[in-house]
Picture 1 (tube, rainbow, N blue to C red):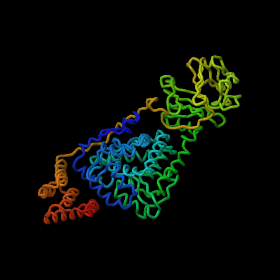
Picture 2: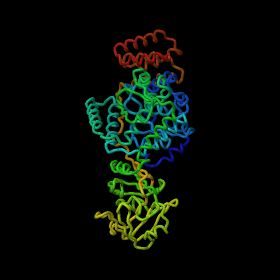
Picture 3: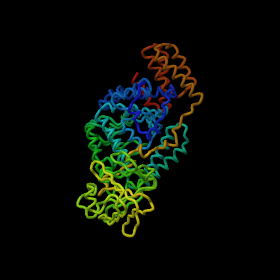
Picture 4: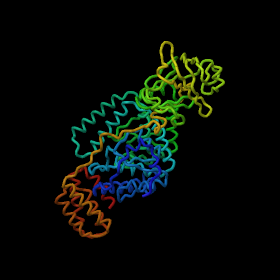
Length: 575
């Protein structure tokens, strides 16, 4: 295997989500589940999916015959500038999108259990590898995914958003485990419903997740009357993809209005959105990004940073970026005139931490005015040393000056910091900062580093320089459940392995009769393995009696267990 440089260059804070795939832990039944779903997909989706789907399977290193090795996928994805990593179930939306920004697909390592072969509420390798991976073969769509990650990872979340993520993750883990108690699932569903009703005004992350859902997960492309499928949620579920194209599912032109359509992951979608082409997806995303604090900044951006309760960044008009936990802002005449952070803070420029302005230096927080210095004819960020002297601000001298907002500053100027001809910082000793009767900084607090900028032009989630800030994501505490198999299930897996070996080696077809006898006597109700045996009998081993016996068994099973009828019929169609 060759190393994929994209993974090697991933930022450290994303690595806590990466897990080993443990390919050897997939059971022979898991392999059969993959094979059944993929053969159905390729047969059906070849006609109704976007044209890049079938070609994309090959470009992503995905075969219908066996579960993909993520290592092997990486070798092949590297050729189109992407990579893949294994993760444990749902990860936080911001992390998911940041992986996308770095051209990395996150692939849930687990595969859906046998009894959820048509649909699983949890992300699994079928959904991720067979749903997301193929469409990135289209360069325009791949760029949309990357751009979505870039914008989405900057979206502000609310405190409730993370609670919602944890509730969804918990419920999906329970539902994906066939051994979960019904009472536990009901309790988790009730908790999720309760949280949903308490969310309040939608955050930027909640809105952009709606765009993600209606495009990346459940998107259609083409015209309203005869659209094609490109969304991973549909590509990985035959049942949903068939239903999606039915007339009773409303088809709407994709637009910015999709942000207002919430979704329920546990139910069929009542409407779907159709984009005319992949470029339109990027145009709509750009439209939404123009409404985000990332591009609007201002008081609204500062308030979103404060309300998030997490590390955020605000960027002054000068380009200076302050990263920390924002706790307060002072407002004068409807405008923010001062900001405060609490705890460790960094100062940055162009997403790189400034030398001498690490978390150690600003360990107790940071505060600074926003606005123009009174008496200046120029924007403060463009003041030269001569301009500063005319305002009474001279290096090495005790200075007094006032902002147009009424904030007063006095102290000895130690240093100025400029980048690209713009003034970013003035640093003072023995400094006092006041607004009316409120003290904002005292000389005993140390050096006062005063940010420069007439307004806040951007605000976004997370630090400007993740590495410099030492950003760390904690891996989810609750792990996905690993199914524990009893002796009967393990015996069934051995039978699956036997059939797989016969198919791969093209030999020992006489053993199929014995395997079939074991199924009849010890594995009543099994439907998938008989289909695999029938497939082999079709071309390689002429035993009319055995073939008839299996067909009769499947016919009786459809009557006694109607829930298997559709699965069996779909399997028979491919023989």
